[in-house]
Length: 425
Image (cartoon, rainbow, N blue to C red; front, side):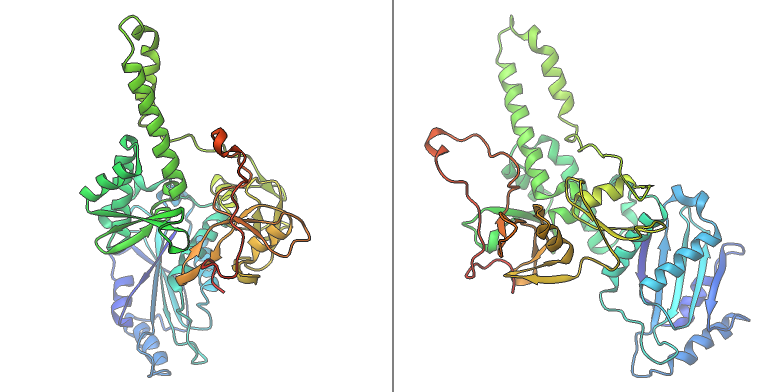
């Protein structure tokens, strides 16, 4: 399920598009507050209501909801109508005129919602952050109704994309192509530069003398965080893949230096290493989980593991569900737990604060300087502590082996300081 917000300047053009398909290719599923006797009467209904707010020019609301082709057998008019109504309710498209039309002229099932931003009481349907809200609500509805998630960007028809979304997929394709052969970040950045993609490392606090905490890619003036290109291309996962490539290449070179007498003994190993070169690192196994007896999908479990909430309905535990990253403990919220709250020098999501207060190590989403966000690990050493410990590495993982010269040094943990140019206040 993907929602696309369409820019329309007139109700007339939108109505003609929605109903101007070949016979049998457009069906009106439902409407409210509009006259359906003719197209002209329908347009007139919308135009009459918009006059209540002559001071507002952008009053035509138009959203298309598209569904995965695999869901087509399930997409009855009843289900699509339920999805449209639930979507409008969550997007606050209420108390106003609307028209919902299903189109059957493409391989994927989809519908269109045309609505008047001028409500019956002359207030406006809010359009603040509508694109972000649209993405979040579509993801929630896919989870709740068990709709199909696309399995990777390889199946996306990139020729139909435009603007930043097309650029993001071009970067994704370049990374998929280059990553198997790159044994260092320098080599990867160099190859990306040949394809007009600039690589920029993000240092903690914006200080280039401090450790790297992320990376961005820029193509044709548009910049994307690595995790925005794809979650599997986050800075941490890319670094892990590059290091695996380096170790594999070093082993291959060592094997190639063996004598002719030694070579038959390792030929099978060499062949296996060459074969594995094109393979992605194995994914973390996905456990079977359920909430109040309702099994969770693989996508829902992955979101929980990544520190994102899911919405579960139809059970005694209906609401937003959050878990620790080990998937051992769950919290259920009746309202959205991603509201920002303050604790000391941090501004973070309520769900992250609650998990830390419960004694868990959390890769929290916090507001950072310059209007950005960051994902440090935060935790309490003792339940009575009034400040959090902070680190960019998971404190639960063993440290790499160190030389004797450094073994006696204390483990470096970044502790909150008032003068730190870290989280915003």
